Length: 282
Image (tube, rainbow, N blue to C red):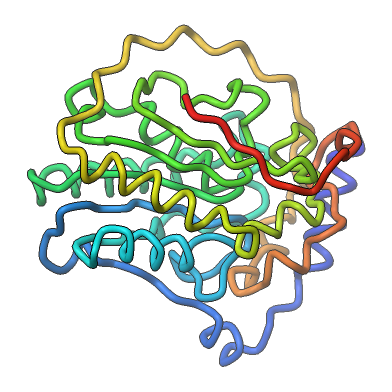
C-alpha cells in the first residue's frame, strides 16, 4: 500500500545519522521537575525526529517554554517528555497517533508533577506527534488528576480532524493552533510549510499567554465526564519489518528536512486559501 511505500522512503532518507557533535549541539532537554516546585508547570512533548526532550531551536518546544516562563514572571517550570518517547516517525501510524510507551511516559510525568508539587498548576502542550503524546496522557488521567490540569495548547495537532479539535475525555480549556496551510493537522499528515511555521508566526506567545491565563487564575479544571468509546481506526499498513533499524540516529534530525513529505495519508492536503494561523478554544 501507499502508506508502506511512503514510510519506507522516509526511513531511507533518514537512515544516515548526523554527526554526533552536531546532534548534541542542536538538542536540549528541560527537566525542571527535578528542581523545586513552581507556581505552574508546563509538560511538553516534541514532534517527530526532534531530539532531547524539548529541543533547542525547535518548531515549538523551547520557544513556548521561554514565552510561558516570561508570561508567568519566571515562576514556572518546563518539563519535556523523553525516556520511552523516542519521537520516531512510526508512532504516527499507531491508532492513537503515537506509541503506548510514549503515552505511558507522559502519564508518568503528569503523575509526578501532581504528587511532587501539590500546589502547582499544570498545563500541557505538544507539537505534531507530541500532541498525541500529551493529549492521550491527559485523556487517561483520573478525574481527580485531570482537575489539576488547568489548560492545554496544541500545535499542529495530528488528531485535530478526528477529534474535532478536542482532547477526548478532558473538559478543561484547550487552544488548538492549526494553520490553514498545515497539512498535518488538516487531516492528511502531509508535512507542508505551514506545519513548520509556528515558531515564527506569533502563536508561541499567544499560546503561552493562554496557558498562563489559566495557571494564574487558580482553581482547577472541572473533572471530565467519561469519554464515549472511540470508533475503530481505519486499517493502516504496517511499516516494514526492518523499519526500526532504519530509524536509528534520527533523533537529531530537523523537522525542516521533512517538508514536502507525506507521512502516510492516502489523500492530499486540503487546498490552502491563506497562510495565516487559526485557532479555536474548547
